[in-house]
Image 1: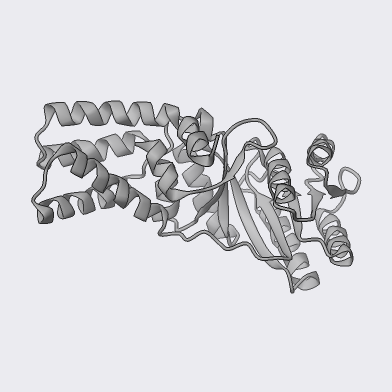
Image 2: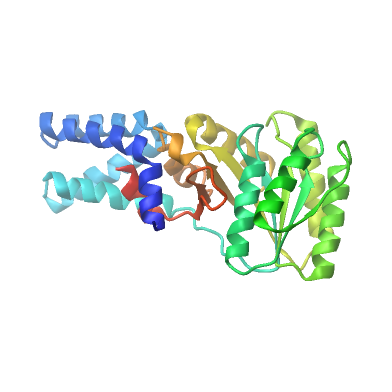
Length: 298
């Protein structure tokens, strides 16, 4: 099954909810002010932020009025086009090599599992990969990353539990440089995004990479649990303010009925979604695609 089928199936819960409400809306309302007010409410109920929902519906309304066409298919297609444009307001970074990818986020979003899947993605694309176990705070994190590294058949650089995370990053960078590795993936401890000392630790690791491996393309990705909806949006806002983010990886997309917050990530915060997790298996991770996400959403 290609990405289209996988993302469509992953968003099944969201689409069922939105599509049902849209059908009811077209049945009971002629396309006018009341229609557009309710369309806005439908988007907000799917966890699109109020700001993004207002902007999207305003554009739909303006273009529909200009075109003087008010049939259901036209308005639906127009809505899809504008939602896709909203996702594309945050262009996806072009991955160049050699590269370092640091993964950040709060506890429980699936960072370590995601790194295993991302490692496998690059191995499938014929790239050499090393992972760095810089989450030295959580007892099982190093072992868990080791399991995923074995599954993906990639090297792991690790220290003892409780070690300085920046020392792990230093050794991993040195190893990646020495071996000519294409991709270095760095796991980090789950941050409660209000904890200043942990945010400072991230910044320290950031400085190590930039100082020791200036020739590498450095990307910082926030891992978000899609099932948390607007809470994921709130996390993204805080992390964006604290750390310069290059993109987002969504986990558990197949478990959410409120995938609309993704439009707000791109439209409000201008952070692109780079990867999406669509299941629990090693290969259940895909490059994000705006057009296909919209098709799965509505």
